[in-house]
Length: 156
Image 1 (tube, rainbow, N blue to C red):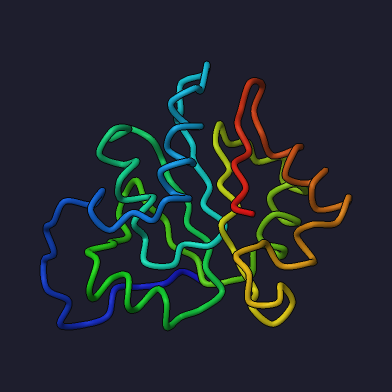
Image 2: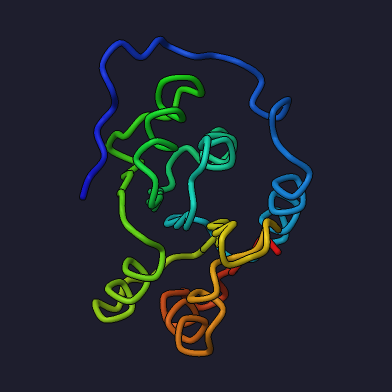
């Protein structure tokens, strides 16, 4: 399901790095080590959208797909953080597991996959991927979605 911007969303401009948590800073450092051109990026767990927005500033020609299971999170990201769907950013409201399974079946490829989805109910309140995303099958699916030389960045 494609997520559309809520009505009455103000234009939001701010220094994105100022609201970037430390684990996003580590993800950006990992991305800086990429040896391939980042043309297609997949964000599994969008939250406030800070990381995709930040990376878009440095990779303006990249096509980004954001997958978020919470419509509330997407609405807040659009309303208060300036996240916008557009020609280079597709926002989808579905689970990371569902998207990755379908992407692997369709042989979709990304130079960067950021697994930043969390499930407080199954991760004991810690920032960790949902248990379903930690299985061997899902890791192999994510691997099959990586282009040659691509990066998988995981928030644990």
